[in-house]
Image (tube, rainbow, N blue to C red; front, side, top):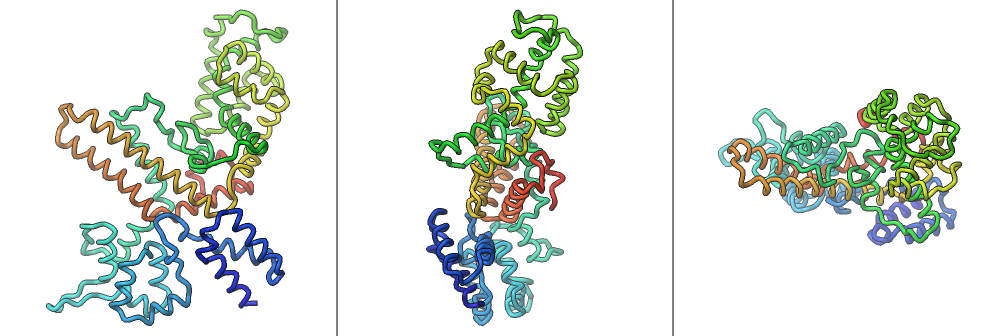
Length: 445
């Protein structure tokens, strides 16, 4: 049994399998299952185990160190071992794990360098790795080089919140131009962070997603997801018209728009409440339920009046959204079972394997980081001729360096643990473990 397990492990870790596309990988997995040497459950478990951090940009396959490889490294002379580590691609969590894999390697990693003067340079290898990672970085006298290296190369889950806050503060800087549709709303929920991708949303899993829109099921799923993402705007922008129709329940047509509705304090209160609920929860069902209660109508009636109101306003994007689903029953069902329809569309549109999901999130984060750098650089150029104090200029360059470091950290794999965490959150959404509207601050670390 162990021989069969090792054989399948070697197949999944081979360059041929890793470099194959998804369809080719599925064929290979199917062929392995057909041999009946192992159960399908065992095979898929081995496959999942093979989808590790080494597949992310910033790490090579050499970072996937096996027990036998670790043993071989432990048998090397110290100077050869350090040279392999310093010239290789293994780094971050993978290196720290390697250094704890045996007493010999742990001693190699922690060994001090004794200078001709007799002075000892503690944890020499980690100091060299820090210099390679951040040239010129000074390790404090009271700091352990290993701990510093870990901080520089491996972001913890709490660090993701720090990054979000940093980008939000950069974006709120008074000189940043938010009038050209480039402002990114800071994500507060899982939906905003991973799925809802428009010009002002993060939507990490959809930024770089390529879909074959010629397939009917893909096209349908795209339409459903887009409609659900647009639902809050669709509802809120028509509240006054819906309320105007509500004043005359017997009317099947809106007729002339009654300006008196614009002086209706109750409607303004509804709109204020809706905006408050939306700002606090980013949950369309919460907004919808409040509107239904405030207007004292059922969902079927609201959808009917919404269609009439949208047609009367002539708002092209709103009309187009409703045109995708001409039957009121479709809209009622989608809004009544919002998360169910959303998750079905996610299952159709997004890949299932960890490698592809990792890469989508990585690419999305990298795109966002680069866009921040580009916009902030443009801002600095636009204001370069203004009478800025040296302190202001220094602060601008400090912020720009911070943005560049975020991108560099992404490229070097520092956020790999966070990326894997986000993939697990996505899978938790699909399984019903997490709601789409769960605030990010409530997610388990």
